[in-house]
Image 1 (tube, helix red, strand yellow):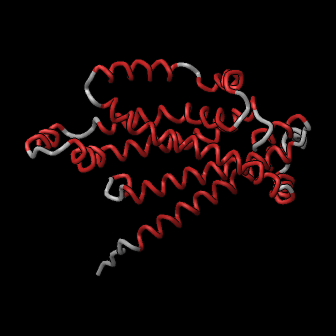
Image 2 (tube, helix red, strand yellow):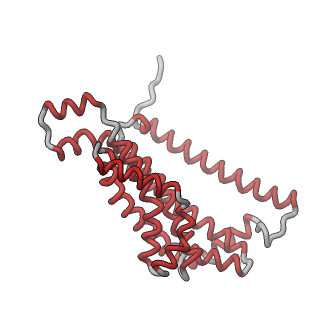
Image 3 (cartoon, one colour):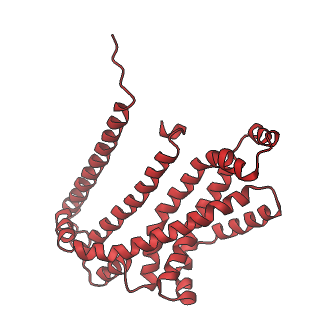
Length: 263
């Protein structure tokens, strides 16, 4: 007699397996880190030992998290604007019209240009305040959301579009009941890409034009040759980045449990 695993148990074991995989990957990374120092006899000023970085993280944790909090707030604000403007413009981009051609050309030109190189120009134009930071984060995260949203809104099958016409559905009804459900998987793909860019964009801007934030702190540790604190700052940045990405992934799991990627 075969024993079937109930649907409620399967996700729990899957999550435990994922957590164990992440833990083992971290252990392997730390082991390789320590072995590299021992084998190649790397100076602590170049690559500090894992235990030294851990102690620095514990001793200076409050200072690092305080510095990172403003960076995280700016990253989340820029990401929110990317989502709020990227999804509607993605829908406009998916509609066959002259606006679509103009937006496509503008999007292509903006994507080709190296956006990270614009950070010094943003400093010259807009200065050192919070607003230019958020605008720069928005600039880097906006296009992935818009492009993926446009692809998602365009993915609705033709027969369903014809059915909406036959049923005389209003534009908002068609958008909410047909177009948006088909677009959500692609939209979340774009949002996750934008979420991965958010902290990077915030730190890049703090490197070139800020006196606060975790990016500025890391830059100061480089000047002072405090590599232990620098690596501790990297860990804080990575944890915040994982947290932002995890929140987006959790919302995705809740919003589209029916999608094949969630099975």
